Length: 202
Picture 1: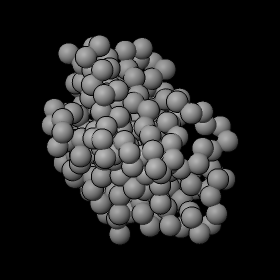
Picture 2 (picture 1 turned 45 degrees about the vertical axis):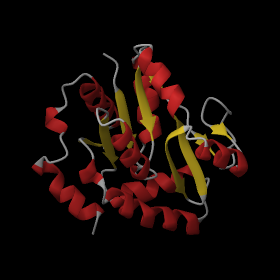
Picture 3 (picture 1 turned 60 degrees about the vertical axis):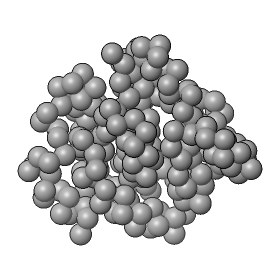
Picture 4 (picture 1 turned 30 degrees about the horizontal axis):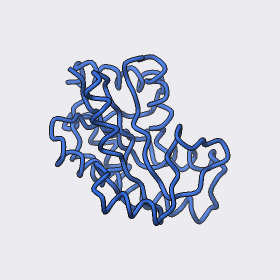
């Protein structure tokens, strides 16, 4: 039985790298390529990383009900094509959505059987450093992303599972355990998260 997995994280937590590692190890897993109105980065390819569309085209798709979820993030619009997701699930493929917490709320309403996972950084300092290492944003944008990250992380309770991206390989294995239905130790309500969340959300 195919499943839909929703993975969310604050900017800089390493979600995209984790999902790429999962895809490399799981041939039956497919990531849904989102639509976005933002400008492609130098290494990004249309149709592989995102479907890059104009604001006008995005609004047309939105009005036509083509999105399973959509949200505005950092002045740009993002949306997941509903038909694409349903076709992959019908083929028996497990599908991963890399979306923010707003999108995750919409997907839960449309497809309540989905499994939701939130990825956290190991500390606020690590998050700041990862954002700097990208070398794609100005200092003002980095600070804005950090402020927004705290707001994003405050929604962790809405998810089924939480994975802390401290050790990359361990985080990939933990995501894999959740996908295989063996993630009980990674449930969102586990007491071990309290100290970390106190530091991240202070």
